[in-house]
Structures are given as structure tokens and as C-alpha cells.
Image 1 (tube, helix red, strand yellow):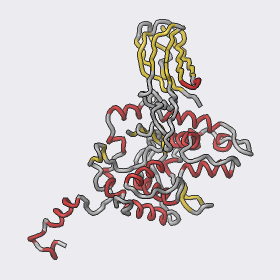
Image 2 (tube, chains in turn green, red):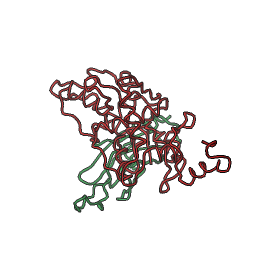
Image 3 (cartoon, chains in turn yellow, blue):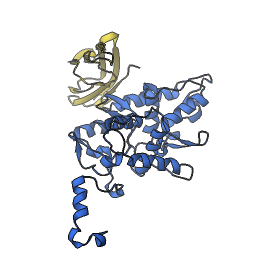
Image 4 (tube, helix red, strand yellow):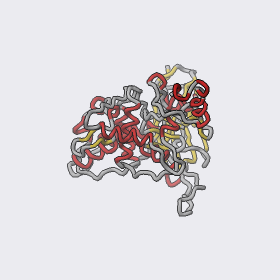
Length: 106
Length: 263
């Protein structure tokens, strides 16, 4: 199950700085570990996380093998208008998860 | 004893205890019991406290989905018999391991879930430490968060509690250490820089940063057994469940934290 949890305020005042927390279920296999038989475990990581606010990218992260499993990404943005926040995680082996969070701005 | 030894060497036993480093194993008084949570850094506590950042919640949410998913030859979900887990499973984890009349011995929560799967749903048992079993266990145990552990011991379970207690105080492995030597006698100390805790299983299954994932109490116990270089028991072994029963009884009254986070 590719699962992600997004925690963003459902409503905010215009101009308010809002904190968004995201958590994605992912093993973040580094590609440097070996099995007990010495075989290399292939890399399997999330490579990129983006957050768009009404279609405009407001936040982006490139992830690397050193990032721990189930990465928690917390950041802030400014509430400008009512609409949707969309979150996307993209990674190795076709991993792709999209979450949407509506936000009402007054 | 002091009479026999005499005034001259009255201090001798105390000195010997300090030198040996191991006082007579005494159980921790109720007022001094501490959850592993209290030994953690502020940062790790923050991860556990915030459901938006607690990675254990990923398993809890998976467990919620599994609770409603139909499985097995009877095509029934946990939900079909037990209804809303938030009501029906409340405080259940706080009394496990509990006595199973059919097996005539205590079973832990994982075994109870699997008994339901095999017996009622007519589905294959979930493997220990599999994602699904951990998720279901975490979801069920989550419904007891904040409630006190309440292991009731009666005549049927007493022999198993005593077996667990005996295991806790038994020296084992190449290092010849008993659980009690660290977790009763030296819980204020450190081992390789990490705090030695009191071994109260308040938050299982829990997310360990070292594991990079969720794990059961049995996984933790097996880790400790390997640590003292003893031969570990397989998952589900009666010896492990007895020890779980003793540890949970020992933590009676402490609050469930599932899904806890530990370093």
C-alpha cells in the first residue's frame, strides 16, 4: 500500500503562514546495503516531493539515499486564496503518490 | 546479617554490592516506574506526540483499512463481527497477553488476531512481523492509547506469569546476563551511550528509528536476547509470550502509548 499522510489546515486567513506536514510510507532503500548472501539490494527511494498550490509549485524537495525511511517533510507556505494544495511524491520503480488537500482562505 | 558479621564489617555488604555493580535484584517500586518515553530526547518525543508526524500512524491507517477488508473463505471482515474498532477494541490491548481457553495458555495480541483469522475468517494466518499483522495489531492497540495496562492474573495464568518472571531473572547467553540486571538494577545508567530503560512494554507495536519501521514486542525481546548472545526463541514461542505476560503485568497501570516511537 502506497500511503501518505498530509496534515494541512482546512482554513486559514489570507496572508497567514500555514504549516504543512507530510509523511510518506516508503522504505528508502539506499542501494548500498547487501543481503546476508552479499547481493546488493537495489536502490529504491523517493526522488522528488513537490507541493503545488492551485497549480503553482510552492515547495520542492530532492531526496537522496541518506534520507531515512518514511520521510516526514514539514514546511510552510502563505495562504493566498481558496483552492487546493496538491502533493506528489515520485520515486524509483514507478513509485508515485498524489494527495490533495482543500484549503479555504478568508 | 549485620549481627553475624559484626560492627567492624557492617559496611562490607554494601561495598561488595557497589563493587559487583549488581545489588540483589529488586523490582522497581511503582512510584519510580518510567515509560521508555521519559528516557527519550525532546525531538523523539515530539515525533511520538504528533499524529501528523508519527510514522507509526502509517501502519495504524493501514490497519484501519484491513479491519474493513473482507478475507478468507467466509468472506468476512473484522468489522463484520466486531463493528467499529474504536468502540469494540477499546482497552483490549491493555489486557493482552490474555488467557485463551482453547489453547489453555496466554496468547498475545498478534496470536489472538491470527486465531480470529484462521478460526473465524477461515483465512491464512498472517506471518509474524508482516506488514499486515503489524498494521492490524497497531490499529487494535491504538484504540487503547492513554488507557492503563490492566493484566488480571488468576489461577490459570499464574504459572505462565511465574515462568515469565523466572525468565526475566534468569541469567542467559554468553554474556550471562539476566533481563533484571539491566532493566531493574541499572535503568538509570547507560549502555553504549543509550539510556537503559525499565523495559515497560507500553507502546507496542512501536516505531523504532533504529528499525526504520514498526516492530512487535517479540522483535524487541529477540533483539535483547541476541544482545546477550543467547539463542533466541522463534516468534510466537511460549517462552516469549510468558515473558510478554510478565512484562505487561509488571507495567500494570501504566498508560498505553501505541504507536509509540523509540530511538
